[in-house]
Image (cartoon, rainbow, N blue to C red):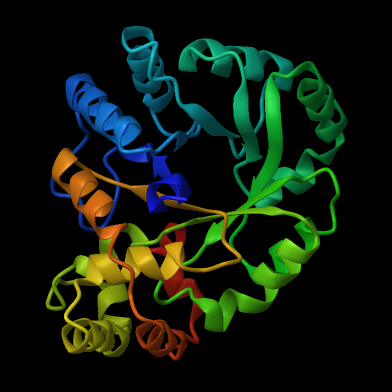
Length: 290
């Protein structure tokens, strides 16, 4: 199995300007097409998107129209507030993405999942019809994870995992989820670019995490590997994680990730990362950043 088989390409950048360290802005359709084609040819076959990601659905659909021999499997997410029939939404998503089946349809948050559990019977009908392969939930906390893994209707759980939001914090729930047969997708591998941001940058999050950010700079130098390589492979090398979602702002970043995915990090470095323990969990949730 190639490392790229485990990578899911996130597409929030295709529809919105996104990330604490994004200096590239939103790519054009032409730039997005080039990134998608390079990703496909490198062995990446799954995209992650959402209705909430601006016009990302249409960007992917336009690519599929123009490159029908490079069709991706697509995971998308229902919005935080569902204000129309889910049947209407699913058909709309399939049309926008220019595909016949969703690899996954996820509730965009635990709250959305709890408020719309009555819809799961309908989603199971779509699974039986072949229009939706997997039903899932995107969560943030371990408590949310503990609840979701008890639901036999949920196939996929997407949660944050990275150098800071690490095995120290997530190991127990990841193991339990795998024992219950769940498919685990992790996101925020680069914490929206926080790991690469200059330490002197004016930011409350950077200020509160300066000690830990300095630590990853130090171990990166000690092991002569880039922080990006360390961050990506720390996720890819976890046996309980099925797929790692990454976002890129441009083709240069994508190509660097493809190179890095082949450069495994040593077990001793993984263990050093496992020692990082962030106590203020809200610092790791980008939705709470100002």
